[in-house]
Length: 332
Image (cartoon, rainbow, N blue to C red; front, side, top):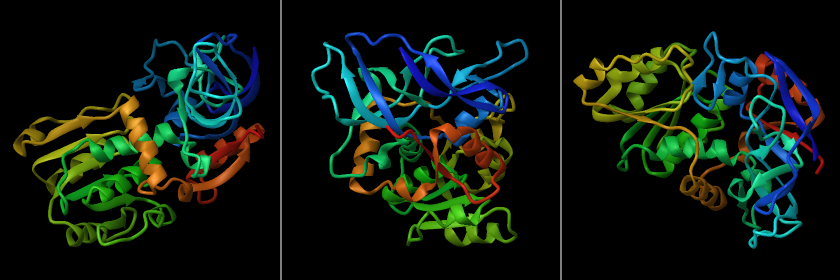
């Protein structure tokens, strides 16, 4: 079976190609993609050749991770259902994670249409909400995982490092839980996306005086979430962690991932490592999007036709204009 896919063919090289997929089996679903949501961080590190698996960095001597079909999330219309599947109908709009592909570094990928996917990669969507709100469901779930991993009481201080999509959704989730949240980032236009409220605050760490905002916002933090993969930034904020606080690590550190344990022991701090997705978190995230507690559509800044994926990636990497959530439109 043939499909169109966004393929990383070499470092910083993006092409839209015809690819081969296995013929669908009795437990598979064929989904015609309408929109896919680019994961700027994860996909970007694959594009640069920095990782060879989900959280496995590339090291000299590893196989070169190209070509590879980009991404892991999309929405689309069910075109075909295997005989073993009884709860999906042709014509239904669904979220779809990975699709199967042949002759690539990995035998799966997300930015592909049509997508041949097993049933466990498909989520039914509420009919009364714009399906596009769920197009980044896996990545949204990463932010939800960051925001729910640590125990939090109403009014507890929470610091989120990073104004990207995972940071935004982690901050939204913590605020929904009642924490007093401070979102740290470098871009005012992104920080403005975290709507202000009595327990929702932001600070631009590229500007002087941001630490005064931190001190004025919260005395101590019960949770510090790192979404950018910066050991240096994380360590600089440990002085603001209260005793028995939780450090939540969601960034990709590559090979520069050494965190000193003794400072954590002094404060009896816990480190929570978040990665991947599971069924419960995906379902919980879908419900919070549906209920409006997690907002996704306001984070979308750009749409590109899927055929212009290379142009989309040039914008993401160069940031020649304000950019965050980027959708590829497949015309499905």
